[in-house]
Image (cartoon, rainbow, N blue to C red; front, side):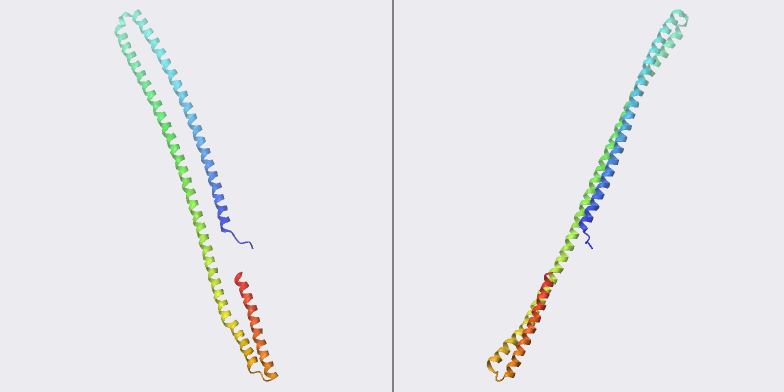
Length: 237
């Protein structure tokens, strides 16, 4: 079975998270475009409303002019009604004043609508900036998580290396112990029996016994040498 690579899994998770963030960003951009279209529609409607209001003001001006002419004609025809004409003039002045007030109110309304549109635009900009700041914060958090995961993996690898080093040191100590005890004993026996051959061999039986002892020690040394070789191979693995 193929071992699981934690780094590859982590990278795949990061790619998935980045794709999700990209989809969310595209969705937010589409919503912002839709809001911009709505703002443009509102601006167009406001321009049309202003044009209609201007047209109405012109109509009122025309009516006022016609009314003044009618008043003059009425004053010419009905001299007795001078008092009423004066009252009508006063009424006309009030109407003009009201028209001026209406114009001022209309201008103030336009300014207020523009201020509302500007405030809305500022809110949209702040909302977009907040979204960008949140995305940056999420990205930094992901980077910290990745660094933490990499640090954890490095710590685990370091612990594994320390454990392997300890096992290797134990193996060396065991090999030294085996060498100092199992190797030296057969060698000492061989040397001792060799000295006996030089000094005190007086019969073929004693010679055969000494040779057998030397052979046994050599076999013991050969067996241990094979064990030591196997042990060193396993230690190297």
